[in-house]
Length: 53
Ligand SMILES: Nc1nc2c(ncn2[C@@H]2O[C@H](COP(=O)(O)OP(=O)(O)O)[C@@H](O)[C@H]2O)c(=O)[nH]1
Ligand SMILES: [Mg+2]
Image (tube, rainbow, N blue to C red; front, side):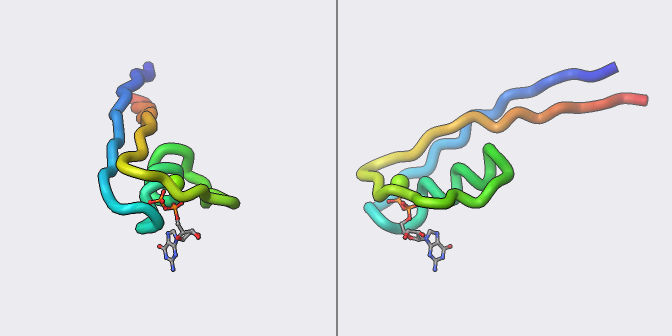
């Protein structure tokens, strides 16, 4: 049996501090290849699958 939780990840900060990179790594489990500088905030959703045996 499996269930799914979704957690919204929101990071605030100055441009160029690594918001997009951090949020992408947390939510997609991948290093962001060509990050673009973001003003204000970066948001994504982390999906967590739980498998119960
Ligand atoms: N040294 C270092 N550079 C980083 C790190 N995270 C992001 N960067 C670099 O910082 C720059 C801005 O990253 P980005 O994620 O676009 O920042 P944002 O403007 O806050 O979204 C990019 O050139 C990234 O490659 C880190 O942990 N260490
Ligand atoms: Mg960015």
